[in-house]
Length: 134
Image 1 (cartoon, rainbow, N blue to C red):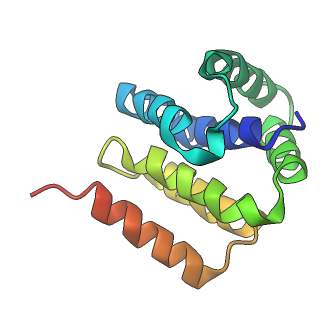
Image 2: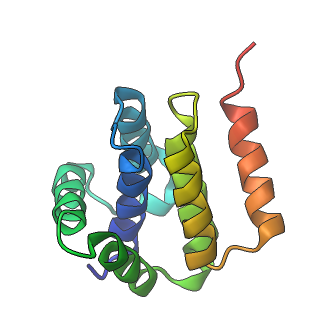
């Protein structure tokens, strides 16, 4: 993978699969993000299933998680690392509950992507506000 948009898809697939339960709301959120965020301009939404499968196949290999992270880091320009963390947060928040596995993944992503703690907290607070219910 060399495309930063595919790397963002891989991040979202990781977030959805973190608790071994890819929910409909998470998958719907991934589709909406790909269709509506400006960072995905030029990305063909029909490539989403293929990129998702490639990520899942890689995850199924020995040391697959580390391989996915290595590919993501190599494909993402530094200026898009906060964006990657933000889209992961959106997917985790989509079903209204963050499992321990998802929270651990977010921590790993924050460190791997070198997202500063204050920036991460702001992104987390924004995601929380967007998904708050009465």
